[in-house]
Length: 251
Image 1 (cartoon, one colour):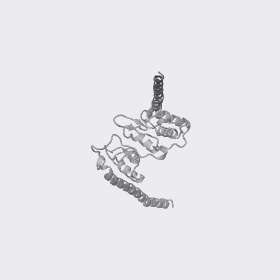
Image 2 (image 1 turned 45 degrees about the vertical axis):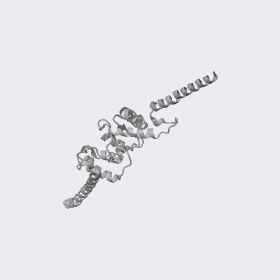
Image 3 (image 1 turned 60 degrees about the horizontal axis):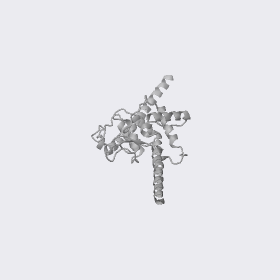
Image 4 (image 1 turned 90 degrees about the vertical axis):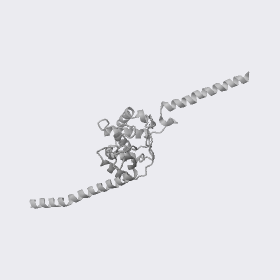
C-alpha cells in the first residue's frame, strides 16, 4: 500500500508539475514578446533594435528591469528630443506596458530587478530610524538634491530633480540604478534598510506644515539671504533716497 501510494503521488505530480511550469514559462514569454514589440516601436530608434545602443542612446544591456520601470514610470523615457537631461513628465504607458518592456530589457543581460514593496515600504520605522535616514540623506544626497530634497542645479545643463512628489519605489530604483548624473549605490554601500530610512525621512519632511510662514522654496539660507538682501538693503536704500530728497526740499 505504501509503494502504491508513492506511485500514485509521483504520477499525479508528474502530470501537474510540467503543465504548471509550462504555463508559467508561456506567460513570461508572452510578456517578453509584448515588451519587445513596444520597445521596437518606441525605443529602438535611440537604443537600437536589440538594445545595443546607438549614437543617440546608450546600450541597455545590464541596466535591468528597475531602470526601465524608473525611466518609463516617471515619463522620462521615451525622450521627445535629445537634451542634457530627461525631464520627468506624465507617462503615456500603462503599468502593464512598462512591466512588459522591463521584462524584455531584463533578458538582454542581468541587472537590478524591480523592487518588491517590502524593500522600500517605511511602515513601522521608529523615530530614531527616521532621524538616521535624515543623517544618511544629508551625507549622501543633500549636496545635489538640497537639504529637503527639493532639487538643485548641476553643471552642463543638468540638475538634481525635486523629490517632493517621488514615490518610495522610484526613489529606491534611482538609488540602485543611478539615472542621469546620479551615482549608483550598491547594497554593499547602502543597504535596503538605509534606503527605507531615507525614504521615511523624505516622507516625514515633506509632510511637515510650514509653521514659520513663507517656506521660500525650502532652500535654506540661500533664498532667505536673497530676500533679506532685497528687502533689508533695498529698504535702507529707499529710506536713504527719501531722506535725501526730503532734505533737498527743505533747503
